[in-house]
Every structure is written in structure tokens, then in C-alpha cells.
Image 1 (cartoon, one colour):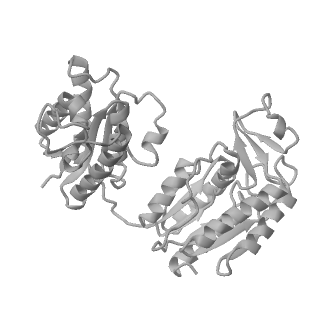
Image 2 (cartoon, rainbow, N blue to C red):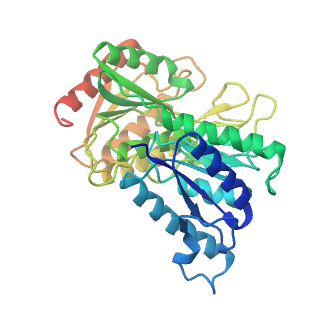
Length: 397
């Protein structure tokens, strides 16, 4: 039996639009479950669930009403999903409706179709989407009832979610999965590691360590998607110190919660520097005396000895609180593209300060291995892969 599509929205203000979606989806042979998340029970049609009727919201301020409706609707959607009732979700909204709809969608696992038709889709959607596989469609016109343009947009949206629901993809061969973090300064290392892992019949799932990528990886680690984590690019933590380009991480980056036993190999990829948005013509005064690698519209500043010690303590604190098996692999000849002898970011004193502080700060059961290679050398990739495979096969040891 086909699972239903959940249609979630503020039916008090967008009732006609959601009813039209319901008709389109049902005309494609899919059943629907309608969930009204409006703040009043005035709507164009009677939904399967009216969240406001399940709550006592009469004396609440608007912001609190929205908060409790999202919380209750999230519980309802999760319950419907876990009971096999729904296999996808769609919503239509303006600013508030988009915020509410996507907040609810985010609780569903990766791969479950999540479709948002939004009047504000042309704005920055980074916080709205976060780390989730939400599809956003710009409504182009505002949603104030139906007209020939809005019906066209909504018909396409309804057809799209049905198409997504109709597709399933099962792998013929299931390989052990390794999550691999990477970013531009260690691209060669990532390519080397990926090639060697695949030669050994492992599937590599890469994550761009740009803030969002690292956080998405952590969420999927917690959901047990992987057999191992090869955390090559921990650079996000350096950027977080400076409010840098890739620094938009949360406290869970590099921290594994209790109950998750996925082994992690940690490498200081990019921890030599922080990437900031300036070029040769716009160097901030406070960085003019620093070692700088000019990349494009972004530039990397080398961390000082003092900053490296602070960063090492941050890394150690996170790893000490983690509950999964951890090992650390450090390349002694440089941690990024321009961190080689003779290059702009090369500073062995700063790197040594990081390593020394890290080793002193780590709990005794975390092993640190050092190799006389640069991070982008193929020999280093071989060492990293050998350690990762050993950890996977030997329960982290």
C-alpha cells in the first residue's frame, strides 16, 4: 500500500492553496493526510488534524503559539511516519509558514521527500534548510488564494512530491560506509584517501567542511549511517574561533553523544589557519603582520602559537567528552595546501604548540600517531586509510 503525503500548512491563511495541492496529489493516485498548523481553526476545508485544537493557546503570545504548534505538529508527523502512515511531506507558506513548515519537515530522516513552496525562497535559505534535504520551490507570485499562475506552480509542486514518492533506490551491493570531511586546502588528500578506500571496497561519503557540511556529518553519525568517520578537515573549528568562512558550527561538531560507537580518526586538516573574507586589497589592519595565503575572495591567516594552544584545548575538550573510539593522526610536514616549508602558512613552531598542548590535554585512552609526511602526500593517505580500516574491523582499536 502506498504511504500518504502529509500536507502541512497554515490552512487559516493558505487553505485554498493546500486544498488545491491535496486535489493534485490525490489525482496522481496518492492519498493525503492534512495537518493544519494555523493559529486559528478557520479554514477552507476540514483537515485530518488541526494542531491548534490539540492545544490550549488562548492566552499565549503569538511567538509562543507558533513555538508550541511546531512542537506539537513535529510530534504528530513523527508519529505518523514511525507508524508507516506517511512517506513524504509538502507545505506552502510565506515567511511564517515557511519557517513553520520547514521546522516540522526537519524531523524526518534523510531520503523522505520534503517539499516547501515558499514566497520567500529567493532570500537566503541557509538557516531555513540547515542540514536537511528539503526541496524549496519559489512560488514567484504571492499566495493569496488561487489564480492561473499560482495553480500552475502548485500543480508542478504536487507532481514533484508525487514523483519523489514514486522513486525508491536500493543499492545492489551494500559496502561499509566511511564519512570523509574535506575542504579546498586538503583536496588532494581527500582524493587520495577516497581512491585508496574504494580500492579496499569501502564506500566514501564526502562532506564539505564549510560549517553546514560538518554539522550534517555529525547528525548522520548520530543516526548510525556510517561504519567509520575519517575526519580529515577539522578546519571548521579554526574558523569558529575567528567567525571565519566555515565557522558556522554547533557544539556537536567533533563531539559524539553517548550510545554512538562509530570510530573516528581525527586529522588536523586546515587547523593551521582560519579562512576570512578579504583579499590583497582589503586586508584588515589587525592581520597585516600575519602570515597570509591569498586564495580568492577569501584568505587564510596562520594561527599564532597562542591561538594554536587555545584551539588544541578546544579540540581536546570535545574529544575527551565523546563516547566513541577515537584516534588522532598528525602529518608533521604540514596540514594544508600552503602549509609546506617555504610556503606562506608554514610555521612549525605554531604546529608544534598545537600538538604539544593537544597531547597534554587529551585523556589517556586517545592515541596520537605522528607521521613524517605532508597531509596531501599519498603516503599520508595510505597511513590514514590503514588506521581507519583497522579501527572499523577491530571495534575502534
